[in-house]
Image 1 (cartoon, rainbow, N blue to C red):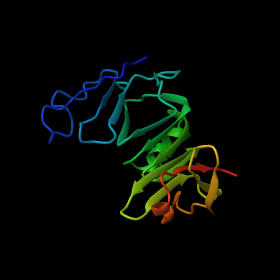
Image 2: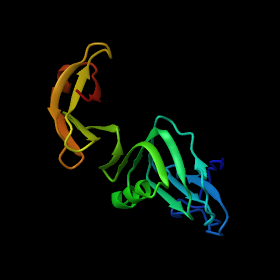
Image 3: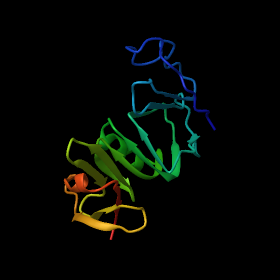
Image 4: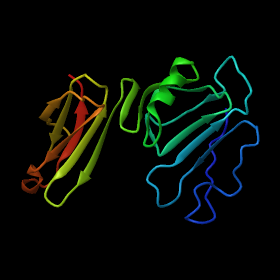
Length: 186
């Protein structure tokens, strides 16, 4: 299994580490600048064909990457994991599934559901409200719930994402000391 390596660029302006180049060798590189919320994952099998999985990944249950690049005939397996890629082409990842070069439990790319039983909830705070964005499978109902204590859950809204996501603005936050959120499927 290829090792995950953290590489820091020599300057904050640098997009990739200065010593990064595609040299035809197999490898996995992950890097994240301190100012970035998510890092970039690059997998390169150096064009070497394989019959099995060239890069099995042991990721957390839900992993988020700013971008994910799969090069050189790499066959990637993170079968039980969900992955959200913030920037990328959903069609490119869909073709990796159909060509059996990618196997994950679920995948969202650029706020577009691509594959599997995956749901991700983004929460941002405004001055007098909380904005929730749920990304999930298109044309399937999803329920946003809130709780004051992580034990008692109340539905806020049930919605069916048309374009893989929907947003909800919770304006009741001013009256509560704290509030937790989750998304569920009925």
